[in-house]
Amino acid sequence: SVIPGSDEELMARRAASLGPAYRLLYNDPVHFVRGSGVHLYDSAGEEYLDAYNNVPCIGHSHPAVANAVSEQLRLINTNTRYLQDGVVDYAEELLATFPPELGNVMFTCTGSEANDLAVRVANFVTGNSGLIITENAYHGTTAVMAGVSPSLGPGVPRPANVRLIPAPDRYMLAVSDDELREYMLAHVRAAVDDLVASGYGVSALILDTLFSSDGILPNPVSWIAPAAEIVRGEGGLFIADEVQAGFGRLGAGMWGFTRHGVSADIVTMGKSMGNGYPVAAAVFRPELLEEFGPTVRYFNTFGGSSAAISAAAAVLHTIKNEDLVAHSKVLGYQIRTEVQSLASSDPRIGCVRGQGLALGVAFVSQEGTRVPDPALASRVVNAMREKHVLISASGADGNVLKIRPPLVFGREDGARLVEVLAEVLDATRD
Ligand code: PMP
Image 1 (cartoon, rainbow, N blue to C red):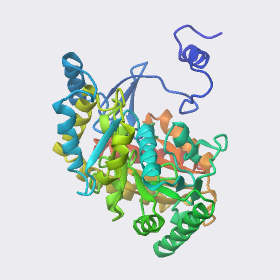
Image 2: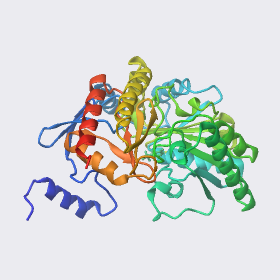
Image 3: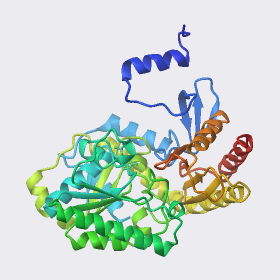
């Protein structure tokens, strides 16, 4: 019998009311009631270090966002059919962070909607419908986006117009940067040829430029630009999904795709954009919208509403004022170096990789074999949770620790993360 008010009772009520599609993280799920900066607090008042959540990029419950949204809600919160300063001011400020050829922005509520809109525009402009994605991509939750999200598993069927290319994983493939480039380009060419031969044509290559669900693979940066050219050669577009990589996560400018030296036709973003307040967007080359715009008459009730924009503006200003992109670079390098030094004496760690504050640690079962060890990754993630440090695992095999803290993670937080990881690695040495 469950105790009223206990977490067990809450889990039972949750399962009964939310149904079976939702998952909880961790073997021992954690019940949070409050967040502040890089810390979360559970129902017993215990503190946890958040090294996992990228959405609260400027920190949980940040007063700049809370105040901006609350003031806006008390003043006016309405939609893009009325003239308002906020949405235009923010649009200009956001577009200024992009290369000049990207000149229009349209607002949505979620990253999924932004990607969905991007694909609608790509299909409209190209007259094609073929989409190319990586083998364990995640691009969202709408019907179209679920179809290009193989990380959801085999239960979600892949539509006939979708082609997969491998994850750009030079460690698992055991190749050099140059070999990886040729390997990826050969697969892109094959996907393009197949879509053309099948009559779908090429609408877009869609890439998360950090390859988060593929196992955190932001490097090498050599292959995306020529891949986009192959796609453009058949009339297709390149869509950079920056839902994960955007807003300075990689510590190299605001956007992941610019690291790759590729020009994007459409860029989508979400997650950290509002620090937890739902706001997302797609940025376009204006010429793509010339015909689509008047034909389609886009309206999204909550997308770009006054409160959402006030949250997004507070986030963008904080990222700039606190120089969080540079911070992400410096701290990410430090954490990666420290984890690499753990790896040098631990053959179970096959590879430490990443850029800025998006780091991956791949576990393998035996030295030299490169056989993924998801069981160990899961043990480490759960053991770290017991020690109040929150991370998770990613990649097609689930063997890659995903370290992706709020951008305001401090040096001392990085040190604590590495220390707890070292303790847990020691404790899991059977
Ligand atoms: N693209 C990527 C790369 C993502 O990681 C996600 C969310 N995990 C999405 C799109 C979808 O965003 P949302 O959940 O806001 O719809």
